Length: 484
Image (cartoon, rainbow, N blue to C red; front, side):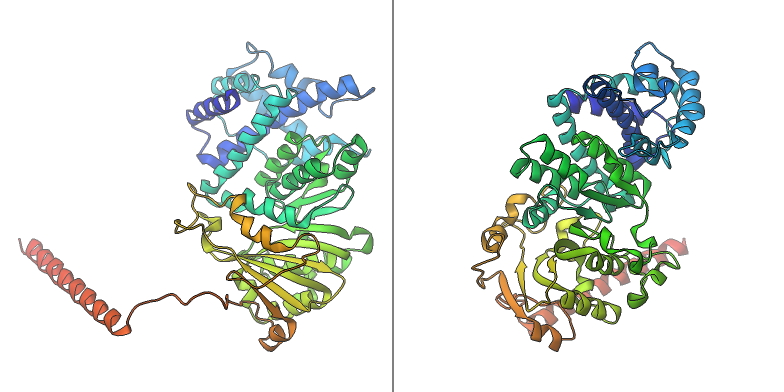
């Protein structure tokens, strides 16, 4: 595939540059460059199809006017242009205040972006390679979109950047079960690189979008916020690749920085699909925005926010860690509130390896609808495929691995559910009796045979004796060496 080959050659060029350190910086550098090329290709198409359309970028800074000529500026002249003119101008773009202002998109993307490359010659080589991709060619854009997904997947090995990526099989399954329709407001309050948004777009385009008006309604009902700069930039670029002309709905902000009570009825949404950050702690003062659920635990605050944001009959699918299910204190109050306000109808329990390599903790997919209290909750235990010990980067979770759960689900009405070796039902009275501890284990699972206790103890004693022998040998060797 020419797109894959082109991007690989770009990455190889960047590896020669002393200023680009590691995968996260390389992907960030790639993304702002691709962003400007994609915007310019879209602009050229919109100038032909929309009378009076004007690019959000000043003439001098449009890709076609500084980057498109392969014999154009290079070396220190190119670096000076990028660092001293291009970036300051795009960071300070003045907004028009009109609806659909693409200047906001550009300014937000470049707000905290940086040029990491130190060699103007290598930067020119990268720019020339990017020029080989035509984002107005539907086939090339589709291939690049597929490769972009792989780039996002690569973030899993890029240190902390991996926290922005949810396996696409998980996002696709959750969106499929939520079944969004064009015109329904869909919100991801911690959108990362936009995985849930792209899955929702694909789902609606495949199932429901048949006319330009339907596509317009779909785009107009999307909402998203991302706190960190790199995933925000990746998400906006992702939206452009999926044909979204105005991705300004992806805001660069902290959703939790606003008091819970300040979210009014006019801001309620039909759908929330999200994987909020968990394990993290919010900065001082954020908990004051949630006086009823005062905590710095990020996942807890997002769950409280989601319950408030849903309209009556609104529905949500949320990824949460095991700690939310069995946690006490604030977590107990939060789960009680959730189950009083919403019907927590399904919890899909995932194995620890789904989010490897950057997280190896148990996670769960919570599905709930607002407007009536929970009377019972169904649990479904997702297992690693037979013959495989765990999910990994080389053997990740795939959508077909959810087929058993899809077959059991019971359609949109969730009718005909039965208990199986993987599924079980828990009435609300049992949940209350356990103090809202939702960490219910599969009652149908066979207890794993750990072996005879006496034999295990004897084996442990032999291993300890062997270890002690090695330790004595090591001491003797060290003593002999020191005596010389």
